[in-house]
Image 1 (tube, helix red, strand yellow):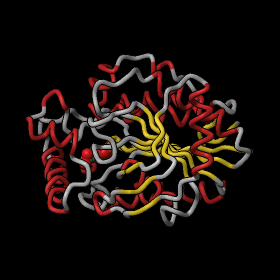
Image 2 (image 1 turned 60 degrees about the vertical axis):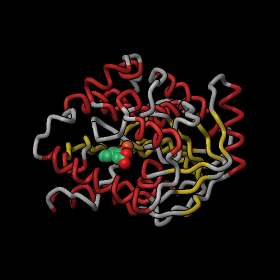
Image 3 (image 1 turned 180 degrees about the vertical axis):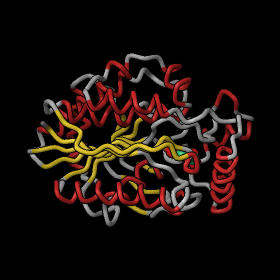
Length: 312
Ligand SMILES: O=C(O)CCc1cccc(O)c1O
Ligand SMILES: [Fe+2]
């Protein structure tokens, strides 16, 4: 048994609203290196911790955490659509072990996933079905949220459960770091938006196109300095990367939810996926970050980071 980690930001604006070519090329190089790291590790199972953006998880029923025993990509933002190759037995075992450890994960036999799960898979693999996966949803947008420290508990329990599988397991975290893109919030929602956040599964192509072009328009406004969105925060992003690299989880997950929003914007809660993935790795002992990239990329609405880590 052995483990490795790759944690990366995602952004649906990649390819739709790119920064200057030199920056795009720099990130492509980083993602190619991450892909090579993964190919070299040759995982037999990929455990992906990722958020959702009101595509697969809506207020009709919003768990804090959910293990998928089967999952399908909705194909938002032009990403691949269709089933993932979920290892159902591994998902079941992980869910049972994590529940036994006292972390209340939900289980889905028919999970829908969006760019949060799918984009890192496209970064690291040739297809959505190249390697069996266990997708683990972490609610990072739909308030109320539990404390970030629960993500550490989840990750630690998943790490222990994964070790018992006796396979080479890659842990993936997806999201962050600081960013405040236009994801609707229930507290400020019009009745129409509240309805969509509750029952808006499977929008029409037209509805999806309107929403996605709205994200592109908003990113343009953000680049031009719109005050409607919180700024990226490279200093905070650096704190996140340093804390995780040194396994100082408490520096992040003992902070309040308000701290995350004030420092990093509403979607900074996606750092919970990094906390969970790093905690899963830490469950196997001390670790070392072997590559770490960061750049604030306003065109992508993201403090964009990609890191790879292995046991020490
Ligand atoms: O909810 C949506 O459709 C857009 C979400 C979104 C936008 C920009 C950067 C991101 O990382 C992100 O997740
Ligand atoms: Fe996101």
